[in-house]
View 1 (tube, rainbow, N blue to C red):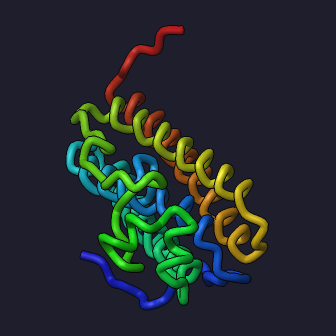
View 2 (view 1 turned 180 degrees about the vertical axis):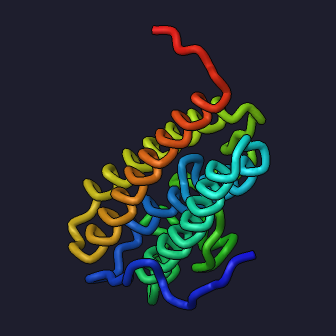
Length: 190
Protein backbone atom coordinates (compact mmCIF):
# COMPACT_ATOMS: atom_id res chain seq x y z
CA UNK A 1 0.00 0.00 0.00
CA UNK A 2 1.18 3.49 -0.75
CA UNK A 3 0.50 6.86 0.76
CA UNK A 4 0.02 9.50 -1.92
CA UNK A 5 1.43 12.92 -1.19
CA UNK A 6 -0.43 15.47 -3.29
CA UNK A 7 2.58 17.26 -4.73
CA UNK A 8 4.92 16.58 -7.60
CA UNK A 9 8.38 15.22 -6.97
CA UNK A 10 9.77 18.36 -8.62
CA UNK A 11 7.97 21.61 -9.45
CA UNK A 12 6.94 21.68 -13.11
CA UNK A 13 7.01 24.95 -14.99
CA UNK A 14 7.13 25.77 -18.66
CA UNK A 15 8.20 29.09 -20.16
CA UNK A 16 5.77 28.92 -23.07
CA UNK A 17 3.40 26.51 -24.79
CA UNK A 18 5.28 24.14 -27.11
CA UNK A 19 3.12 21.55 -28.82
CA UNK A 20 6.04 20.02 -30.70
CA UNK A 21 7.91 19.39 -27.44
CA UNK A 22 4.74 17.91 -25.93
CA UNK A 23 4.61 15.49 -28.88
CA UNK A 24 8.21 14.45 -28.19
CA UNK A 25 7.70 14.17 -24.42
CA UNK A 26 4.70 11.88 -24.71
CA UNK A 27 7.08 9.01 -25.42
CA UNK A 28 8.17 9.15 -21.78
CA UNK A 29 4.51 8.81 -20.83
CA UNK A 30 3.50 5.81 -22.92
CA UNK A 31 6.51 4.82 -25.01
CA UNK A 32 8.64 1.68 -24.75
CA UNK A 33 11.26 3.27 -22.49
CA UNK A 34 8.85 5.55 -20.67
CA UNK A 35 7.78 5.87 -17.08
CA UNK A 36 4.63 3.72 -17.31
CA UNK A 37 6.64 0.82 -18.70
CA UNK A 38 9.28 1.19 -16.00
CA UNK A 39 6.79 1.40 -13.14
CA UNK A 40 4.86 -1.65 -14.27
CA UNK A 41 8.03 -3.65 -14.99
CA UNK A 42 9.51 -3.08 -11.53
CA UNK A 43 6.30 -3.46 -9.55
CA UNK A 44 5.70 -6.78 -11.31
CA UNK A 45 9.25 -8.15 -11.07
CA UNK A 46 9.48 -7.60 -7.34
CA UNK A 47 7.49 -10.75 -6.62
CA UNK A 48 10.20 -13.08 -7.93
CA UNK A 49 13.18 -11.42 -6.24
CA UNK A 50 15.00 -13.79 -3.88
CA UNK A 51 15.41 -11.42 -0.95
CA UNK A 52 13.59 -8.60 0.80
CA UNK A 53 16.17 -5.93 -0.08
CA UNK A 54 15.76 -6.54 -3.82
CA UNK A 55 11.96 -6.62 -3.47
CA UNK A 56 12.01 -3.36 -1.53
CA UNK A 57 14.25 -1.73 -4.13
CA UNK A 58 11.91 -2.67 -6.97
CA UNK A 59 8.94 -1.41 -4.97
CA UNK A 60 10.67 1.89 -4.18
CA UNK A 61 11.84 2.54 -7.72
CA UNK A 62 8.58 1.36 -9.27
CA UNK A 63 6.68 3.75 -7.04
CA UNK A 64 9.05 6.60 -7.90
CA UNK A 65 8.49 5.89 -11.61
CA UNK A 66 4.77 6.45 -11.03
CA UNK A 67 5.73 9.87 -9.67
CA UNK A 68 7.81 10.50 -12.78
CA UNK A 69 4.79 9.56 -14.89
CA UNK A 70 2.88 12.29 -13.10
CA UNK A 71 5.68 14.81 -13.79
CA UNK A 72 5.68 13.97 -17.51
CA UNK A 73 1.88 14.21 -17.64
CA UNK A 74 2.05 17.65 -16.03
CA UNK A 75 4.71 18.82 -18.50
CA UNK A 76 2.70 17.64 -21.50
CA UNK A 77 -0.51 19.17 -20.12
CA UNK A 78 1.16 22.54 -19.56
CA UNK A 79 2.84 22.53 -22.97
CA UNK A 80 -0.48 22.02 -24.83
CA UNK A 81 -2.70 24.10 -22.55
CA UNK A 82 -4.72 26.59 -24.55
CA UNK A 83 -3.79 25.15 -27.96
CA UNK A 84 -6.38 25.36 -30.70
CA UNK A 85 -7.30 22.42 -32.95
CA UNK A 86 -5.43 24.12 -35.81
CA UNK A 87 -2.30 24.43 -33.65
CA UNK A 88 -2.60 20.78 -32.64
CA UNK A 89 -2.81 19.78 -36.31
CA UNK A 90 0.15 21.98 -37.26
CA UNK A 91 2.27 20.33 -34.54
CA UNK A 92 1.48 16.85 -35.85
CA UNK A 93 -1.03 16.18 -33.09
CA UNK A 94 -4.17 16.31 -35.23
CA UNK A 95 -4.81 12.57 -34.96
CA UNK A 96 -4.30 12.71 -31.21
CA UNK A 97 -6.75 15.61 -30.99
CA UNK A 98 -9.29 13.72 -33.10
CA UNK A 99 -9.17 10.72 -30.76
CA UNK A 100 -8.47 12.32 -27.37
CA UNK A 101 -8.81 16.12 -27.58
CA UNK A 102 -5.97 17.26 -25.27
CA UNK A 103 -6.36 14.34 -22.88
CA UNK A 104 -3.25 12.36 -22.10
CA UNK A 105 -3.12 8.90 -23.61
CA UNK A 106 -0.44 6.25 -23.33
CA UNK A 107 1.33 6.52 -26.69
CA UNK A 108 4.88 6.98 -27.91
CA UNK A 109 6.08 10.03 -29.83
CA UNK A 110 4.68 8.60 -33.07
CA UNK A 111 1.24 7.95 -31.61
CA UNK A 112 1.64 4.17 -31.22
CA UNK A 113 -0.36 2.98 -28.20
CA UNK A 114 1.35 1.51 -25.17
CA UNK A 115 1.59 -2.26 -25.11
CA UNK A 116 2.59 -4.83 -22.51
CA UNK A 117 5.23 -5.97 -25.00
CA UNK A 118 7.27 -2.99 -23.73
CA UNK A 119 7.94 -4.67 -20.40
CA UNK A 120 9.67 -7.87 -19.35
CA UNK A 121 9.49 -10.21 -16.42
CA UNK A 122 11.52 -13.38 -16.93
CA UNK A 123 11.25 -14.68 -13.39
CA UNK A 124 15.01 -15.02 -13.19
CA UNK A 125 16.25 -12.29 -10.85
CA UNK A 126 19.57 -11.85 -12.66
CA UNK A 127 17.90 -11.54 -16.07
CA UNK A 128 15.27 -9.18 -14.68
CA UNK A 129 17.79 -6.91 -12.95
CA UNK A 130 19.94 -6.81 -16.10
CA UNK A 131 16.79 -5.80 -18.01
CA UNK A 132 16.12 -3.10 -15.42
CA UNK A 133 19.62 -1.64 -15.76
CA UNK A 134 19.16 -1.50 -19.53
CA UNK A 135 15.72 0.11 -19.13
CA UNK A 136 17.13 2.85 -16.92
CA UNK A 137 20.00 3.53 -19.31
CA UNK A 138 17.57 3.77 -22.25
CA UNK A 139 15.41 6.20 -20.27
CA UNK A 140 18.50 8.25 -19.37
CA UNK A 141 19.44 8.47 -23.06
CA UNK A 142 15.88 9.44 -24.02
CA UNK A 143 15.87 12.23 -21.45
CA UNK A 144 19.16 13.54 -22.83
CA UNK A 145 17.74 13.56 -26.34
CA UNK A 146 14.61 15.35 -25.11
CA UNK A 147 16.83 17.97 -23.44
CA UNK A 148 18.53 18.44 -26.82
CA UNK A 149 15.12 19.12 -28.43
CA UNK A 150 14.07 22.07 -26.27
CA UNK A 151 15.33 25.54 -25.47
CA UNK A 152 12.89 26.07 -22.58
CA UNK A 153 15.02 26.38 -19.41
CA UNK A 154 12.10 25.33 -17.20
CA UNK A 155 11.51 22.15 -19.20
CA UNK A 156 15.25 21.45 -19.30
CA UNK A 157 15.45 21.72 -15.50
CA UNK A 158 12.74 19.08 -15.05
CA UNK A 159 14.24 16.79 -17.71
CA UNK A 160 17.70 17.02 -16.15
CA UNK A 161 16.24 16.04 -12.80
CA UNK A 162 14.47 13.03 -14.35
CA UNK A 163 17.63 12.05 -16.26
CA UNK A 164 19.65 12.06 -13.04
CA UNK A 165 17.06 9.89 -11.28
CA UNK A 166 17.50 7.32 -14.07
CA UNK A 167 21.25 7.30 -13.35
CA UNK A 168 20.59 6.70 -9.65
CA UNK A 169 18.13 3.90 -10.46
CA UNK A 170 20.64 2.24 -12.76
CA UNK A 171 23.25 2.36 -10.00
CA UNK A 172 20.85 0.90 -7.46
CA UNK A 173 19.90 -1.93 -9.83
CA UNK A 174 23.61 -2.67 -10.39
CA UNK A 175 24.05 -2.96 -6.62
CA UNK A 176 21.04 -5.27 -6.41
CA UNK A 177 22.35 -7.40 -9.28
CA UNK A 178 25.68 -7.81 -7.49
CA UNK A 179 23.87 -8.71 -4.25
CA UNK A 180 21.65 -11.29 -5.96
CA UNK A 181 24.58 -12.81 -7.85
CA UNK A 182 26.50 -13.17 -4.60
CA UNK A 183 23.49 -14.68 -2.85
CA UNK A 184 22.83 -17.21 -5.58
CA UNK A 185 26.53 -18.01 -6.01
CA UNK A 186 26.46 -17.40 -9.74
CA UNK A 187 29.83 -17.98 -11.31
CA UNK A 188 31.20 -15.07 -13.25
CA UNK A 189 32.92 -15.81 -16.51
CA UNK A 190 35.02 -13.15 -18.19
